[in-house]
Amino acid sequence: MADKNIAVEIITPERVVFSEMVDFVVIPGFEGYLGVLPMHAPLVGAVTIGVIKTIKDGKETKLATSGGFLEVNNDKVVILAETAERGDEIDVLRAKAARERAQQRLSSRTHDIDIARAELALRRAMARLKAAGDP
Image 1 (cartoon, one colour):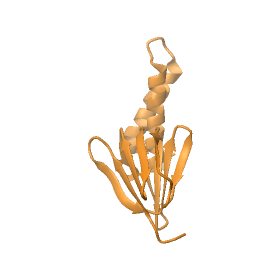
Image 2: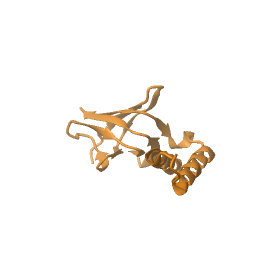
Image 3: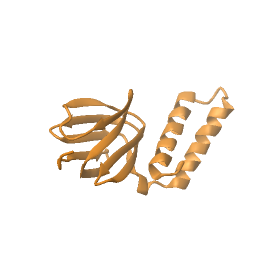
Image 4: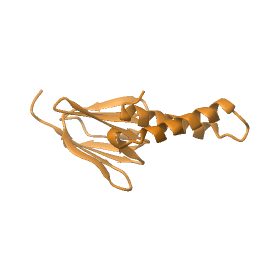
C-alpha cells in the first residue's frame, strides 16, 4: 500500500475526541462495519452503537460510539457522534455496572420496563467494554 494516509476526525457535541492521520478506519454502520482506506469514494452514512477502530503504523486505537453520522470525502473521514470515548478513557467498572443494570432490566421483563431502552443501554455498555479491551 502507498504511503498515503487518511485524516479521521471524531467530534461530539462536547469536544473533538480524535483527530489523526491513519492508515485505515473501521466504522460501525447499520448494515455492518465499513472499512475506509485512502482514496475511498465520497460517502455519507449513519453510524450505530459500536467500536470505531483506527490503525496507524500497525497500532490500533479503539473508540466506543453510540451513533451519529459520517462523511468521507477527499481522504478525510468526519464522524459527528452523539458520544465517543477512547478505549483508554473508559471507566471499566462503570461500564460493567451499566451492563449489569441493563441485563437485570432485560431479565426481569416487568411491565414498567422499556425493553428497547434497556437493549440500547446494554449495547452501549458492551461497546464501551469492547473498546476498553475488557470482554
